[in-house]
Image 1 (cartoon, rainbow, N blue to C red):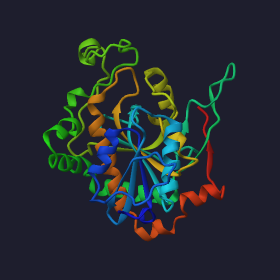
Image 2: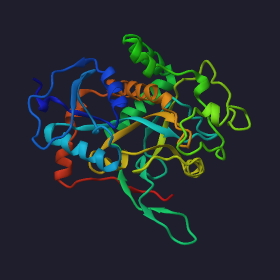
Image 3: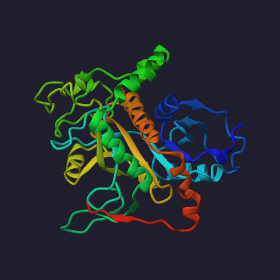
Image 4: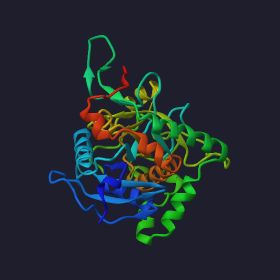
Length: 341
């Protein structure tokens, strides 16, 4: 059995699709832990990526949201007290604009921008008559070690291009056909960005192409990516987090004007209690047109990016980091930020 003290990287997933993607990119799979805290309700998979021992946990089936993510992180630190860097990896909803050409299958990395820590909680704040909603959440930025690695990987990708698509395809082809059907890249024709005024009927699971149409009058026209462009592309900036899914295109677009690239439902519950980097593969456009078709591939793309990131970090740098459990017990959380939306 594996010694919990050997694991320094904590990786959290929200749903089993993300969990499966994370396991796919392990270089080695280890035996289960020899000890888990009696109050720990998590399921763990242990393994290695590059030279790092990684512990991966997933939220309980059917649960999502800020408090559930915080509980998983808390329990992980009880059983794996030597974890020094955290990762929240999975899927999210994109917020495309003319400036940020976000497509399904792309990856968004939450990094500091415009005086924020990279993550904002957009359902926690106050409304004042005659003024915009004001967010009052203060969230930490990712640890410097991870931000530095992101910068290095950004330069690597700009110089050599990213090979995430190839990595995902290679990982999928090694699996059974059933796996490929869920996690392979869907046809580009299923990537449809609807105009904000086109709303999918409530509680109607009919395919969008049928009930909402696939003509140019309903869709925002976008040209194909050039062959020399990375696909999937990596975007860096602000991720918005809340307890509820974003399914309103008009609100999405308003927040996108303020720099938001992605919406999700766990990060704000972690940043001040489990300092981590948030990495999201885009599976829909944060509107009423839910697109489960892309969830598997988006999760795989996010996991592939995370593996590339860990390969840039040397083990001695991780060992030099303070244990997250020590940071929290010492009450030494730093780098708080405020964001007004």
